[in-house]
Image (tube, rainbow, N blue to C red; front, top):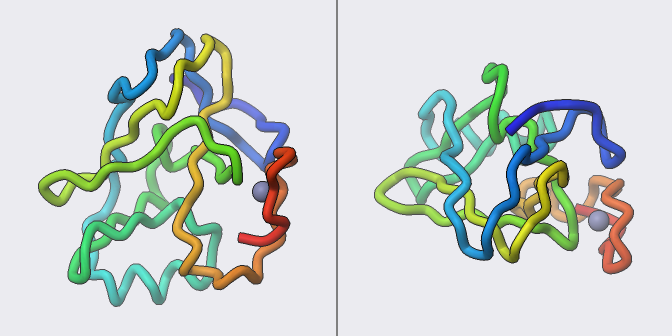
Length: 128
Ligand SMILES: [Zn+2]
């Protein structure tokens, strides 16, 4: 995977290799914090830097310099997150060509539909 400028927003995460449908892509890494702290921090930023694992635990990747920290939200994503044993793993929703930007439909709760969406998808909900 590589991080480079995205047409959606800022930097994006791109796959260098083709991915098969439902293939595991990798794991969301970062600081492990409480869910309560995660929600407090998430109010201040784009949602995908923080992933909630369960009612107690969240992962904050704000200070990560690579990886899923850079994945952008899309209303028509090509990946999804599965929470397995307190880890957040990313999987391909369908087959993805090499060079494609990876996207995920992230946590609607954090912004309650108040953040304008820039995903440019045909099915964009306009707000996250
Ligand atoms: Zn959108």
